[in-house]
Length: 289
Image: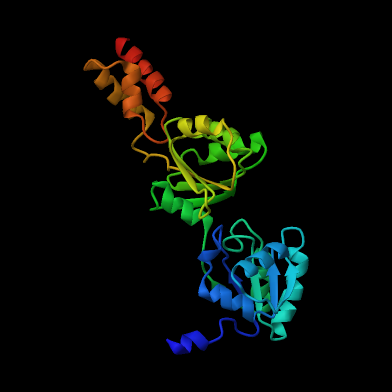
């Protein structure tokens, strides 16, 4: 154990990618604290946020700190490679969570691979995984889709393409657009599809909303603040199609239940009660012919 306490975290000539806390500074790992203190060069998405994090962790920074963000990363990457090749200990961090995951870092990783520079990673907090774990939705198979497109047309096309995806979907979203996004999600995935809005993860006012997309959209109309991760349940298996569900609703209706109520009763994620109801009416009409 004593060997691990004294062994350096960063290796000269290596570029390390490090996850930073997504909200609560206490989530910083021991390795991250030591890496911040050991680094010769730190490439940060926002240098001021890095300095605030170091202050919160009571870590003295001795590195040369440079900005590496979406607008300059490709220009910055060759210099970082040169620093590593010169034997420097280079650390790459984003504002929160893991670099590359909807954050800068990919250009540096590509350049390091091309130049034969060693890479390592200091794993840690991840907003998509934290939201998935708290959502109550299936973690068996999932897909992180990054930020929801800002423009309504593109957002609609993306959601339509994912409507039958059988993996749990994870998105980042702005609180200003959440209501519109959830309304679009209802149109694409169905009102009954389950979802979760994970707000301010690990922070003082952490809040998780769970329910149908229709319920979540209604709740979001009042406005919301903070950083948002949206999780949407997978589409049902292929055999749970609208036709078979319509037949099931008709059987319930023949037993005395109102057809609309029966459609709501058998609805599953990805197949709306409205679609089941109209399909059941079509089945009923065809039987009369």
